Length: 523
Image (cartoon, rainbow, N blue to C red; front, side, top):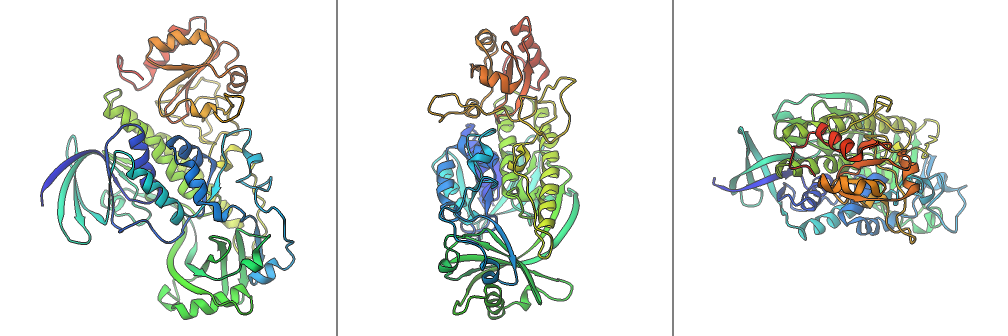
């Protein structure tokens, strides 16, 4: 074993969260190494949706269009149905000339126009992850698949990490300033470091049966997202993967009396024939992935130089486009802070705000997904989701930490009901050009920025901040009045709001002194 190289940040895990972390680190100019034990991205679809906040982050990282294209096969899949089999569930569903983009849908532009320049996207992870991997490899980051993390030793000012090449068995040790653990729900690091979790409801053990069956003639014009199946001896959820020939059936089973080994391909195929109820269709099982839909949140997201993100930090049922999206928001929150600290512009107290901000967000996401999952249990009343709040789209996180300066009258609830410029919330969206192609959300571009009228330009420049004036529409949305301003962090969340002080320079200087940034090397 040899010590070969130092990396400012080591990312463990090459799924959607780890790959987003790699992209974000490159975006902030932070060199990194990503390692993943599998030889390539996962070929099982797993999650199928990304919320609006995840797509905003991909917009910032320059991959939103490619991710949206990867989800094209599922663009027309909308709606939840119930029945003893697919044919019966769709029997009375009329064929629609233009399915998709229903006004009440989480993915419809009408649902998002008030808050965001983009919408969520239905897309499976087996389609999205190769897009992110290709983009990450075009950036100045090192990516190694087929590489297993086999050891970790913590020093005072660095980590020593043992890596093993899965194919050859060759080993080496690298060092890193920080490590992002994005190695999934089964990742070992949280157990190695003894980090406890708070567990909520288990929504049961399931077999995710990925299969092929040509159902285009049945579903064309009435493409669906989910059909809840309830029949004698079978309970589960049928989901569209490409809404034509690829599908997944999540079969519930009781681990107290049976195991995945009791479901060989032949038995799965018979179950699928019954679940489909379409004469002549012969489903072909591609793969079977056992999993448990449970609620879990890690109690600590930071252990020294190690940070947990994604499913390593929290598990939730796949109900409401929050699972992968919450992990994407985790690393987006963390990476800019790592960049600032590594760049000498803040000390490590800034990194403590990752726990303060993302842990409450994870607790909320897990609880909301659990509530949705209970409503989607076969045999339960039909869910009536409300897509009219920012939180439904991943936009409702209100941060409270040393990196946010609220006024005494600002709400403390970690879930915001509106995006109105309140410190800690994501800045309001307003178009900044007549063609409506550029949003106020595009202004931070991964850096600090002060948004306000011209009177704030000189104070911003003196403080080393970029400045922009989005105009009166934004001022009204942000609650600053005609003379106020908002200080926006690199992740697009508002750090401070002023409503027209007599001395903008003094007010801004006082605010910056209260933030965990080093004097003389502020943004």
